Length: 362
Image 1: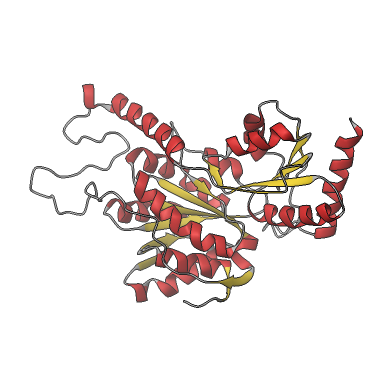
Image 2: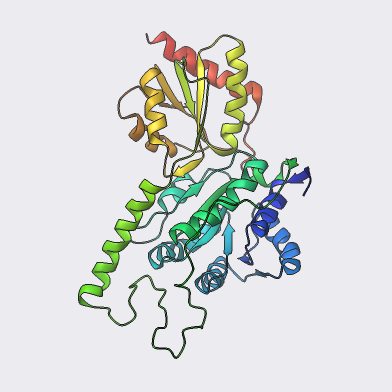
């Protein structure tokens, strides 16, 4: 497909279809609604199915069934809708069901929800945060690859800007390498053979639920698999002007797009400022943040909330430099996150003031 102008929601939908997604279910809530609408338009021609579910609970339940049967499947919502899906997401992780989940967030960013979740028990899932539509076209497809590689849900984090901004994009199928066979899926082929499969958050063994193959052993296996994912997935990160930066700003997603541009402008003024943009929010690029912090005077965190990612930054920095939160709430009445801070002059002044304040302390 040749490059063309397209909104992020359409780009994400096309990338999911290009990745082989053939089942999608969701409940409409803007800015997730637009992705759902495009999937409803695209999937029938690709031989797939899109369902406008009655609620987020029905959406993730339908998607669980499709994914457990072996289909590449996806669902999603805004943060409020994903709150209803948290129980299922936690159990999908323990059941080893590969699934892609979209969080097209509103207002305050949902970093805690996306990286920590609100479900029960021990579970983690990879989180990818694209900065724009072209990157989303790649990361959506990578999300399906990670989901199948690790047999685990993967979350793609977006927002109103990613969904609605038009950009030049080219969506084409990407090959991330071989994947293990889906010989675990419950597709009916083993019925009556005595070797039917089990996809359950309680056990991997249909015949035994106690003793060696019981629930405790299964939870221990889940913990080992989380550790393997954390070690086996290489964190993705973008950095700029960090070699000699005294003041480094860490930001992700749309906020980082503005930070990246403003840092470039302040560099032209001669200020020794740099930026770090985590692309994988889990696993977090802690080593990169730590290396940058070791050379900087101050690490600042800019996000649209009262301070969420700042906790992971502090853990990564581990005392190498002071960590300052310079973010703020989104105050627009729409609730979609159209922040006053998303203005070049306003954000430039915010970073310049924060830099000057830290400089005066020395």
